[in-house]
Image (cartoon, rainbow, N blue to C red):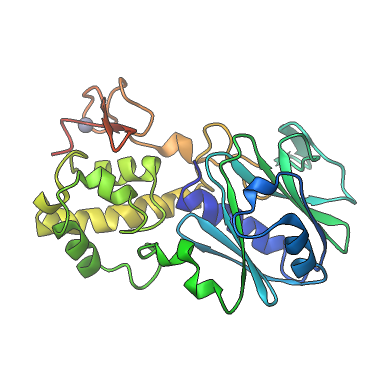
Length: 294
Ligand SMILES: [Zn+2]
């Protein structure tokens, strides 16, 4: 599932392409993805509108189109890619040698999993592909957007000024839930999921099953920094791809090679050599090192 670094990578990719382009038509092939409008209304409201900017809050993407905003949750397998109809599609991930540089291309044609197509007036498109169909789209007027329940429910994004050490300390002090579960609660801090919560706890040397309110101030300080560190690293590597995640250019993320514990249970810890363990917390598989994390 895309977490903050993956969604930020998609945002940066779309931000290269969308601003200034004008929408000709929005085709919704799977209406259930639209949570607060129907395909006809969406198309009518967005026709002729210009993309202004692409924003992100936690794992939510916001596509601003003049007086309307599309709010997109990618769910488990949502992909948003850009397609220029003047260029050939590359439906498999091929690597070409171009003037000595290895360059991958990944512009796709729509397929049976492509459920929304935003067509622009200059013969470019944004394709929304979602194999498991857990994605959710919302349309809000610019005026109503700040009150959108999907945004109101979120705690601070770690890259917003409201994410402070004092804030995190106060939130953790209030909860007896396992620290891993609290980190994945989007109402506490938004953007972390299973991958980056496991990674942050390893970097901070904190056992994931500890009650959140049992952390002392030194541990909370380490965790506060570790969260920023793993997210920045994930963004620098353009996200983590295991299966479905792609950036706006259709490319895989490179962060999987840098993960310390996530997905590595049963393998030796890079730091101490002990075998990494797994357990289930909040319904999610958690990987950790019993020797390094206390
Ligand atoms: Zn270890």
